[in-house]
Structures are given as structure tokens and as C-alpha cells.
Image 1: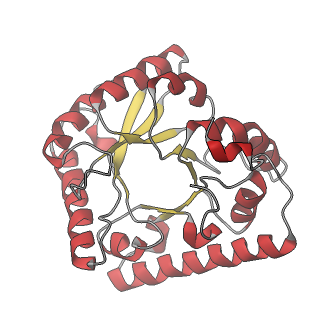
Image 2: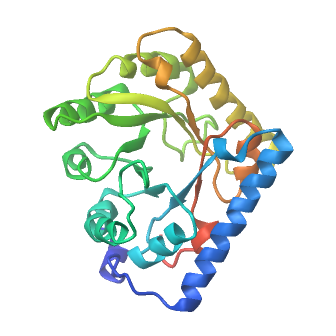
Amino acid sequence: MTAYMDHKDLGNVEISQERRDEIMRNVHEVFERIRTACENSGRDPQTVQLLAATKTRDVGEILAAVDAGVRLIGENRPQEVLAKAEILREQCKSRNIELGGAELPFHLIGQLQSNKISKVLPFINAIESVDSFELAQKIARRACARNINTDVLLEVNVSGEESKSGCVPAQALDIAQKIAGLEGVQLSGLMSVGAHVLDKTVIAQGFQKLRELRDEILNSGVQGVQFCKELSMGMSFDLDIAIAQGSTIVRVGTAIFGERDFK
């Protein structure tokens, strides 16, 4: 179990009105950032989804974001999916929202170990952190055993930083084409984390590279790649840059919930 889970009840649904108001205000501000970034790039804001990255956040905090208009949730750790999903599902049902359905998609955005695949599949409908064909195969086998089809995004390390996960860009086309041929999963896009630098030009170059890879995959004509349209890139710091480069999903945690007490 992750250490901070001993100190925080992730299934808690009760938060103060002050905390609720803070989160809702932050969500509205992020939506405004998205709108402005799209306007500056000549894009329709409806083409960019806001994913609330809810690592270390309890159900009450997540629900405040949902009530403010968030319609996509992303968890980093399978342990947190298992700790929150059932409670969150029931709370959403009372709001006439289906967690993991079209109303509120539930993504895994962090690393996934093989022994956790079967445990999380009943709760999530997309895995954004698939960094190899081997992992995609394992997900596909378990999805087929459950007679379901799971969306996956291929994670690409466009920054080249050793601290980041993802396949190298030179391998992305080959891996994507292989994943596209699997039963049980659907390759729905690419994901990346921007370079951890202050130079916005460097960050933008990485996001541009991901967009070019996505386009190369789409244009390859291989059966199954026609669904590879999403670009999950951009977080609290660099979402504006990512949107200018074509992002369709921005993963935002800090700008919605504030700095984390736990890592």
C-alpha cells in the first residue's frame, strides 16, 4: 500500500464548504485558461477535454470538481482506483452520472504493473500509460477474458528525459501499429509528459513531436490506427502550450486541487 494511504481516507466524501468552493473556483479558472488558449490558437474549446488528475485526492474533493463541470477523471495509481472507485461510483449515481461511462470517463494515467491489470479493468475505461506492446498484449488478454474493449493510449517520451516513462519516439509507429491489431483494446491516441524545463520553446517542440507522431500513425493506413486521434498532453504548468500544439486532453491536478500534501 502506498504510504500516504495510511494517513488519508481517500474514500472520504465530506469536505468543508470552503474547500469545495476553492476547488470549484479553480476548475472554472482552468476552463477559462482552456478557452483562452483555444481562442489564441484558433481552436474550438469543445475539442479539448479537461481531465482532473486526482492523485492523493479523496472522493469529496473529486466530487467538488465534478460538480464544477469536470467530466473526465484520471488516477495515477491502481491502489487509488481500488480505494475510491466504488464509493465514487455510488456518489456519481446520485448525481445521475455514470462513472466510467460516457458521462464521466475514468482513465488510469500512471504506470500499471501486470499484476494490477485485472483489478482495475472493471473500473476504468482507458489506460493512458501503455508504453510497450508487451503491456498492451497483457491488457488485451485480460480485457478479452472479461469480454470488454478497453481504450489505450501509447505513452511516448518525447522529451528524452530519463526520469520519464514512455517508448522512444522512433519506436512509436511500430508499437502503435501492433497495438492497433490487438483484440480487447483500441488504440485511441498518444500520451506524453512535457519536458521539465522553463524554456517554452523546448516544451512546445516535444508536444509538436507527439502531434506529428499521431498524424504519422493515422496516415499509415494500417487497420485499427484510424481511432488513434487523442493527444493527452499538457498539465497545470504547460497546458496552454499543449493546446497550441493540438492537445485534446489536458491532465490537470495542481491547478484544480492545489499542491499535494503527499507525493
